[in-house]
Length: 512
Image (cartoon, rainbow, N blue to C red; front, side, top):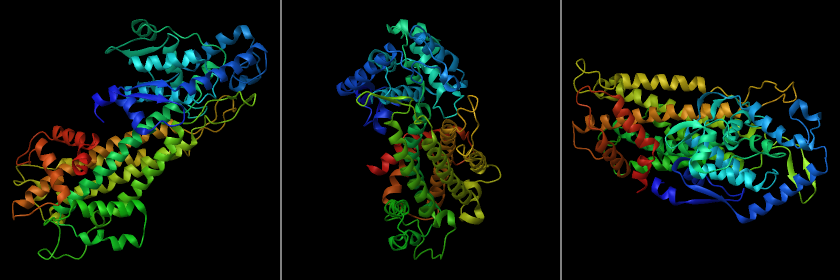
């Protein structure tokens, strides 16, 4: 999606139908968001019921009581505003580097969408201020660490809300400033929180879900790119296409496996690089022969995770929830991030496997004993090292991924005097998955460069033709990065290839 197109978009929030495309348009490309009129009605009704409870001095958790262990401490009507402000200030305890701007914009959007469902009891004016901050381009400084993933993302979301009340810090107009200054420059009045509003704003899973949604979007692009890159490597190594015969995959009909096999066949259609009558061979190593069986399950995993995250993007995850039609306020546990935690651990493992097998194909490309190509893909070895340390770097990244792929969701640590005695670690799982994804994109980019180099070296010995799909990929890479004839600075080549992978340009080349 182009930046220009996204900036012209306006996403309508109803709490029910937010898509990944819309999420990315707002978070990454600056599209704006506003509330659906029906959502406004739900918000007003919910707030009216909360005001009724406050006026009647009813004992309701988080509205007229303290929080967590202090849930049995009654708060007077006069102290309700101070309670909400104290909640935000005391809970803003995050540490570490600020989350990327696109993640924070995603958090603002997802929080607004959850509140738009009308179960949170927030005032319409408060939610519209949140959307004004988003649409104006103010990005609260939200430290990346400090969430247990239940009761939701309390600490990082509190940093987001600090800016709404004129506290904390924000990035705006190209610099870091106080939240109060950012609001003043933008002409936005700080919010004075009333009963239930602080809890409505910070009790939820929007930090882990924002990280997760962007990771899923990027993982889909990576998966397609990994399939394309694997096809090019298969040709550079004179792979055997029999392993991708549809009859094989029909006997084990996992959808991802069948899809990858079909993609490989389409990409390599018409190729004279692959093994055939001129180069008779019986069998390839697993890194080539089992591309469909390894990439396929990763694709299936991404599909599953996407469903989980899309549900979470359109869920009410704070507590308590307000049901004005039934005249009920129910305290539950929708803030618990377990669905996202498990899904993001799964995503991290699935993406790590794409990198693992990619690095093994890269090793086959640079190893003359396995490839039949010049050692380390350099025409003049000894004087030149070629792709020797490219594989070395890729090995480092996949090793790091193996450590990061350890699941966060199997851990828990009690908090709030054992009131919150089982937590999800969902935000840690999401952040880890994002790190794994970043490493994996670099590994696939390294394989892509090596595959193109292998093609060039193979072409040098005889007249050969790439497949109908892979030819366009090869030409795209070569329009940005030339063949390596003698050693040069490699990290810049890697960054160019990485951008082709992560941006989706590689995928677009094949789709067009």
